Length: 236
Image (cartoon, rainbow, N blue to C red):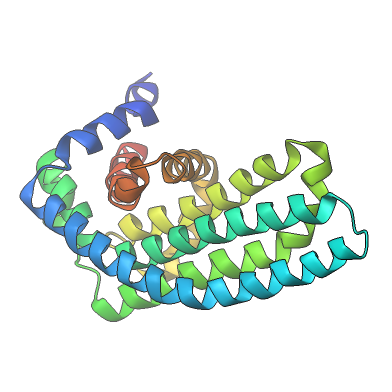
């Protein structure tokens, strides 16, 4: 019974996080992480633009040879997924650098005992986690790209797989962001195994935030705050 009471629904975690986004420490992280994200996204977008231009030209050539409508659909799907994926990868990598400040602010307000014993994540470790997040996200999605395209014919297969994969990835990234303050790196793998379902639900919620216009700009900060609530309520 006690364990059930200590489970914080994700919807409640979301509204608690949303209510704290106006706090000065969280607002500062939101502003600087958004600025860095947009700059990096713009820079990376230039390279992606040329890659997609070559892709679309290749399919245009196929269409002239009677390739049919499937290449058009595939091209549109690849373009949409590529831009979304690039923004999500960059945004989560950047919040990995500043997320410790968000987590600390949430802990200070809601979990003062845990906050008092937490260890700030060193910049080197935060950088490694952020880069690792971006590499995993882009690499795994690129590996699955042929499957995404094959599932286009089902109508719903691609979005389901895409959300499942990226929910799993984001749940790991957000969970590690908080856990790194409270346990050594060698214990993370066991903690991930024990909290797989909870982190997956968190990751699916965060992935959903990334597809909502305007709200997607705040998704990394909201995700970090939500992960803090999920982490500490799950430990009770």
